[in-house]
Length: 139
Image (cartoon, rainbow, N blue to C red; front, side, top):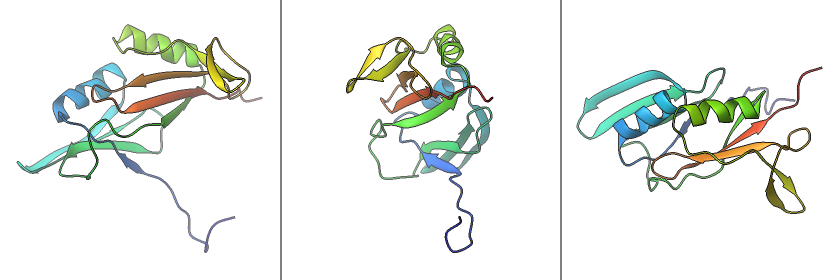
């Protein structure tokens, strides 16, 4: 049921970075996000919007966007159909990524888990932290 009859869709998350060009290269060339916008109307303001393939939500990096310390955003989460394939793609592109892990008895341990319980973790060059979760196969 919708709140007040209005749809609410998360479209953009601002990710705080210290070096826009370095972060743009990481997210586009290493992680594989699509660059939608790179707009710099002044030396004080730049916005780069990138979208994970298949996602309805984008991230924005840049200058003059948000008052957050670079690297302070933790717990961003992506969902994929095949976490092992996603990990292999990141490793092939030079991203430091954890082994496939699952949550068991209050902690993450190596190896895949059951439905919704297989993850990999990586950080961007500033230390913003990402989790990638495997969704169950659609039946």
